[in-house]
Image 1 (cartoon, rainbow, N blue to C red):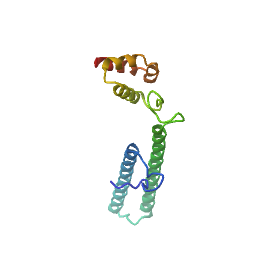
Image 2: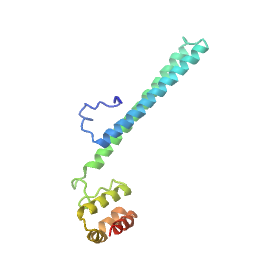
Image 3: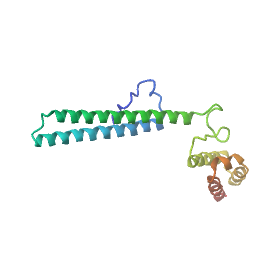
Image 4: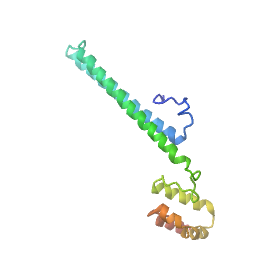
Length: 163
């Protein structure tokens, strides 16, 4: 896949994370699809006009210009959406004024509850290899109750199943 929706060598896009690169690839795929659909539409229109002996008509030129204009505006929307997604991902992954995101020192409230569940589970799995101590520590964690919401009980049941 050739990436031409953004210039990856420019300083703005040169240090992208793997997640951000996946976003760029997805946006490039949308752009490629938009370009292919516009080319198909122009080709079909040209064949239609040729079959009706109107291939040299100014109506064809205006219709092709309209298709090109719509294609360019769609590409601009895709690019601006990509820029927004990249900015939001960078904002959510780095940290805040309290430092980098790490549970329980500085939990990331930008994550969804299922992602929070995975972060807290990983934290408790890494803390100790003793399942009883892990369950006891988790049961005493008041931050986890508010941070996980309804996922708190699910993680508690999971940690209890290891005992």
